[in-house]
Amino acid sequence: MQVLIVESRPELGEIWKRHLERHGMIVSLVHGQDEAIAALQLSAPQLIVLDLVLEDGSAFAVADYANYRHPDTRVIFTTNTSFFSDGSIFRHAANACAFVPNEVNPDDLTAMVEYYGKAAS
Image 1 (cartoon, rainbow, N blue to C red):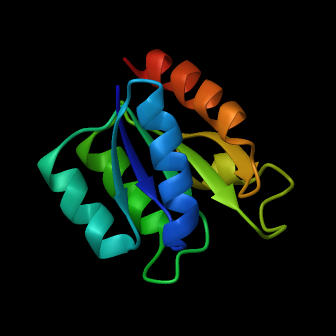
Image 2: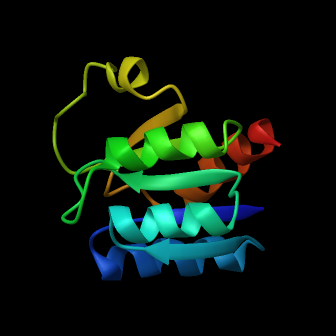
């Protein structure tokens, strides 16, 4: 399974990347909107783990581009804020499949990536 992680904090992204790779996934890690769009121009991941509050760019721009370019790609949004805690993220991003806090346990994130990635295949 191919996964794209878009996370502004490199250390957190690396933790998730290494954990997913240990479970046999092919993982790319980028840190902002421009890098994410460039990655999506080169490949079609089954799933994107996307920080809702990017330091460089817009998570919604990334999700929208992914939805346009790769309609089967699903997005797990992560956040360290209470924005969209009411579930409205699913009305704003058609390809959203989950919304979790950044402190998510890597084992739980891996299980979600496996589940939603298979559903997208």
